[in-house]
Image (cartoon, rainbow, N blue to C red; front, side, top):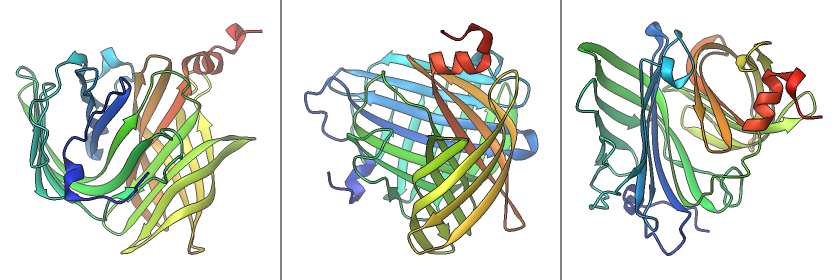
Amino acid sequence: MDDSLTPADDGLHEAGDDFYGTETFWFSFFVPERRIGAWLYTTIRRAAGICGGGLWIWDDAGAAPWDLPFYEQFSWLRPPADTGPEKLAFPTGMTVAVREPLMSYDLEYDDRNRCRVELRFDAVEPPVPLRSGVPPYPRAHHFDQIGRLTGAVTLDGERIAVDGHGMRDRSWGRRTERHYPRMGYTWAGDAGTSLLAYSRPAGAGDDVYAGYLRRGSDLGKLVAGRRRVVRDPDHAWVTGIELEVEDEWGRALAATGEAVSRMILPGATSVCVNTLMQWAIGGQTIWGEDQDVWPLDEFRAARLPDHAPA
């Protein structure tokens, strides 16, 4: 699998005949002073002829989908007729227009009722491919990229300004809805620092098995690290994290994160508890996220240990 990227990768890729061939677009953004986090997300299965995704906005008032300020999740829309790469308009209401290939985008979302999003994403680093064959999508291309998002969200008539750093990722390749193992996707970022760690359970903590570290313009892939999580005793979700990593150039970094707000994002056989995190890194405050992915049965057992299977 070729990990190199070109401007053509801003558009949709050839579908092939794999029913499970899936392409995704994800942008996250925050309003920390309001304890607000949000995702713009689209998934496309061109061979199957369907498009899904939507917009999720959460704060600290509740974590379940029905308690979020805005939750719109589609599963069975038609894919867009135009395949880009200059501009993609998805039937969910999301639009991605290229300002500079692989680096800068105009983003919109319009639900035609309660919510309108108008943002600009400007990357602070080139897109960073995940090594081919690495979980969670070993048969798909995947890259991550931190950038600054500016603009506004208008929700129920209130204009909420957005100006901060967020993450985007892109993937295309085979993706099914079963057999998701436990894993963590943890990141923090601003103009001078990027930290992304993929981790999986190992003993009393989690081993970091992939990701990257950027300080200034120097970027290196992670080769080792640990993620130690403090969890709410009743809900099993993340309340705090200690993260230590080392990259391929021998640079070490330690980060301590405090949970600010979260949303529960259920899937067919798994659940992602996504948490807005305030990170302390080298005396600086940097915002980011933690995606805590569980198989549904394991998450239930963690929350309800008295009802776990024998």
